Image (cartoon, rainbow, N blue to C red; front, side, top):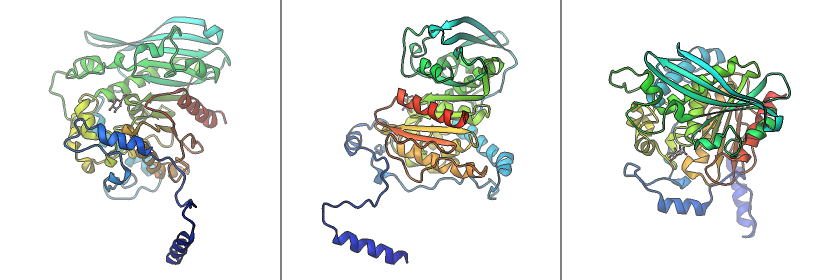
Amino acid sequence: MKLILKLMVLVMLASCPQNLTIAAEPEGWKANPELVEKRSNGDTNNNGGRTFIYREKEVPDYQLPAVLKGADGKEISSSDEWEKSRRHEILELFRSHVYGRAPLGRPQDMTFEVYDVDRTAMDGAATRKQVKIHLKNGEKELAANAIIFIPNKPEKPVPAFLLICNREKDNIDPTRQNKSEFWPAEELIARGYAAVAFHNADFDPDNYDEFKDGVHGLYDGPQPRAEDAWGTIAAWAWGASRVLDYLETDTRIDSSKVAIIGHSRGGKTALWAGAEDERFALVISNNSGCGGAALSRRQYGETVGRINRAFPHWFCKKFSEYNEHEANLPVDQHMLIALCAPRLVYVASADEDLWADPRGEFLSALAANPVFALYGLKGVTAESMPAMGKPVQDGQIGYHVRSGGHNLSEYDWQRYMDFADRHWKK
Ligand code: GTR
């Protein structure tokens, strides 16, 4: 039957006039060929002797590790089995092979100092607070800062968006003299959400210093670093959880509805924070690419080898064993998204950000669907990549690809708030 259909289509095609296009392919996003050409000719810094892949046809054949097959080879067929065994197995694989293992959860010696409270912020629309999170380990101390705006109305506890800021601090200006689309706090307030942000460097400066500064310096012992010792992304993710610890104590925040959001290296961090800490109810990855939402095995744009050479502090040491050997990884990034199930997730890509592999980000979200299905839920509700500017938001996983380059834009934020409205304000 299939063969007959195929033949019929071929006959139809053959008899069609040349200028008639047949809609044989779904009208999803495709990388702009000019941009692909430009990238393919240019960007070739250290990729372990390989050229970077920007042409879809150059993506190698790959097979993703099965998210629903346990280490003992058994199929996982219920949410119960997922929660009792497989979820933990996958989490452990990411800890030991990719991000490293945070040595502790909520630390013993942590205090919150609330200061700078202004009930008339944003022309009276919000209350601003800043919170110093004091961390101590013996004689050593570190303080990280969180900036919080809470809508004055309604007076009940509100859901919050917590941004991991990996750009300059003036992007999260508490005085609001500097307003950046990277953190549109006024827009969040107008839509009824608390806007919370912290700067990643407060927990760990973004440079390679052999893990002496930040929370590594505070907590890591004198012994040589293990292969699976936490990298900087894991340190930032751990920091996000400490901000959430504070938010849980704030009676104006509905801590059962806190979204963790980050862009690029911050997006990788948001996903890892969501995997490690199930209190985050919505996990948002904006253009997170390699080591974030994008499938490593596709090797499209930035690769495992390149990211480990350029940023030797982001992941654990073990991860560099997979430089140019992606197929040996016991996980791929769809499993990271799956670790957020059944909670809400949002993955977003940008048309010109081929370095982050938009298609690889979408396919990764799609491959996480079976885990959501165990809960009788839909993940991403598109079978193939949607068109640019056509967000898909019905299921537990939201997805969009927007026009423009690598950035966390006003458009992205509005879509994230739409998604939260849809799922949280039903
Ligand atoms: C790039 C890096 C990406 C991404 C980005 C960013 O240089 O290759 O993985 O994380 O930085 O954080 O802006």
